Length: 136
Length: 136
Length: 136
Length: 136
Image (tube, rainbow over the protein chains, first blue to last red):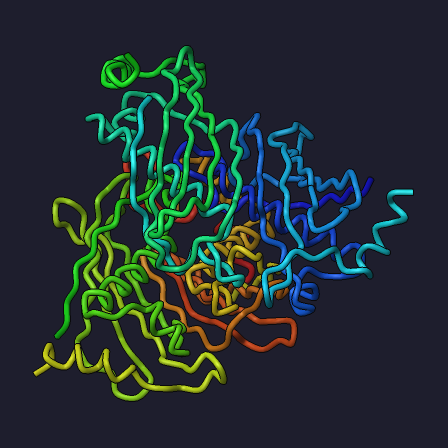
């Protein structure tokens, strides 16, 4: 299992008039947390795009248990339970506030695709090699 | 069953560098489509908030089948399959492009809550009365 | 002078916890209003990008006089006071609420650039021809 | 003069199909940079709102000189050239990339207002005291 923790400070623009983070504004947090996870492994998602691989989101399923507020310093947990086989990868995300209360959790499925012809591909070899030790 | 169709033009700011609508940007479309559905019934979500009722999102589950592009005129279908009992309401949304191809679909669960003390409540009586004819 | 009026309904996601449209969320309204202005002239900004011309924003100056609220149906006025010479174009925007009160106004400068090599270019000939009758 | 530097990593959702940060997405960076500036002084903007003071934006003027790209680690410089007198405060912001090239610069004017009755007010005394040493 591979686990990463990233911290995000809630911005004013992300909070609605109920005084809570608007539900869709968690997705950029998750994307940013996945990007930091890959960076922690010594690669970047930006590099991957330069190699011609893109990762469109194909499925999201999240539950919002408790609200996040303006200026909260959130912990975004990114969990990879299984190494991807083929072109599909599934990430689990959990959001905690400073009191370590779970606010939101769920999963997101992305595909590895070639940008040029939009064909399914697999995780780049060097990233796979960095991840393998976490799954043995 | 209650069904509404709302049209949304994709804005430049909603499209990412893959040239497709970023996955989280569909949620404001859905929210806007639910607001138009309620308006069609002769009430507004803004009225509901003025009555002290808010509707936080508690669960989202969507699949992204095909991308939407900049300037696409999308049709957002909002479907209510059952009248809400208690404080929970479940909407289904489908997104179609101008060629009537299904791009995205899924469901979203919201709660009726009192803004003052954040207690679960039920759908306002007048809205329920407007919806009932669609379910008999 | 060329003037266009476009209508935009304020979305829930665009309003902050002060209960007003967050200042940066007017810019997608303006962009959308410029796109509708061009469409009114029989062309689209999407077409222009397909021709290899992009229009990056280089300067914005706006004043926020009165707030817009959730669900307000805003009128976005787009004003072109002069035909562009060279690669620079200056649009004026005004935002009115349903009571025709002016909420926000200002101007935005964009450049016509070639996407391929990021060189300054001029307004496409066919768009210029459509605009000229408004300036004689 | 009071100067603060804050770092922001560009998110995927903030970049448009030209491959650059969409012009309006700098404003949440600036807001976040102002919030960090106040935090550096030992107070938070969230505290100020709890005291009943809000700070609506009334004027923005920015120039976009060079684009920021996905995953860029930006430096946002926040400069207060003068202590606010009355209810008006003027911040200057500059955005630099990792090569210390200036990308964007400009200024933003906000008002101190009482949330309860929307009347102009002044900067909270304790924040003013923290700022004064920077201006003597």
